[in-house]
Structure formats: structure tokens, C-alpha cells
Amino acid sequence: MKKSILLIFVSLLVFSCKNDKNKTSETEPTFIRGEFILIDNAGVIKGKDFIYGVVIDDMANQLHQKVKPLQREEYDMVPVVVKGVIKPNTEEGWPEVVEIKEIVGVSEPTSELPTKIKSSDNEPPAPNEIGHENHDHSSGGDHEGHNH
Image (cartoon, rainbow, N blue to C red; front, side, top):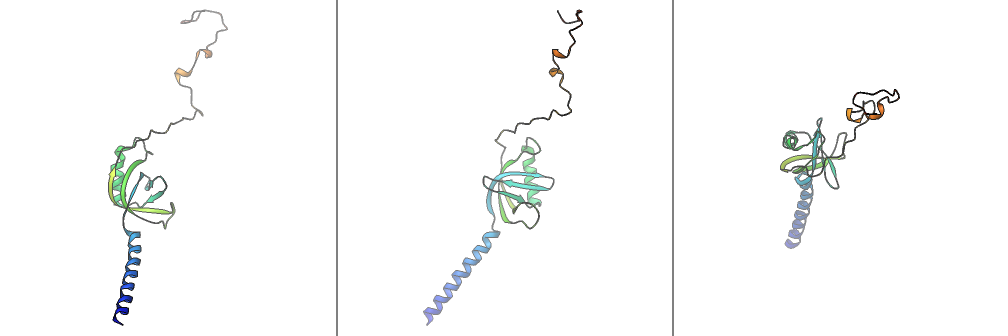
């Protein structure tokens, strides 16, 4: 009788600990490696197979201060490693957010900047783009600087 009560007690203890472990793993910080950007009070960490919104708090602002000098332009994402808690997003935005608990490391971006193509709409041509074809050669007279 004592052995069966002891067995039931041990079984309950094991199952209750197992449930507690699942609950704490949702709040335990995990390592997250990705690229970070913070613009206009909205942050993102993007990895190879995930994108998380970032809870904006003191840790996110500290990370932003470490990343900012490494950005080559305003929208440059910088590689980071953080420990954070991933949780469902209760607000508008990404389905999941990460609350940063620890900044493990920040490194310089390794990829090249994307190529930028400027729009030519309503822009005057640059001086070196104005060619010889804009001169009037029909008058037949000698023009200063031209040999005809």
C-alpha cells in the first residue's frame, strides 16, 4: 500500500514538474541571432527563417545605441545576438515579438548596400549629360571652341 501511494506521489510530482518546465520555457530567454533595425519607435529582428517585432523598452533602446554607429545608412540592418523572450504579439504588427533581456553581441554588417536607382522624373540632366547634340550647327558660321 505504501509503495503504491509513493508511486502515485512520485508520478504526480514528475508530471507537475514537467508542466512547470513548459510554462517557464515560454518565459525563459533564448538566444536569437538576426539583423536588427529600429526606426520611428518600431523595431524588428530578422533571422533566416523568422521575423520578430521588438518590444520597445530600455534594452531595445540600448541595443539601438550600440547598432546606430555601425549602420551605413538609416535603413541598414545590423547583425546582433540577443537573449530574449519570444511571445505572441497582442498589438498590431508582427505575429510574435521578442522582449530583449540581454545583449550578447553586435557586429558590423557584412553585406553590400543595395544599389540605389534615382528617379529621373522632373530632374534636369546633369551638366555632363548635356551633349553636343544640343548645339545648333545649321548656321554655318564659326563658333567659338568649335572647328567646322
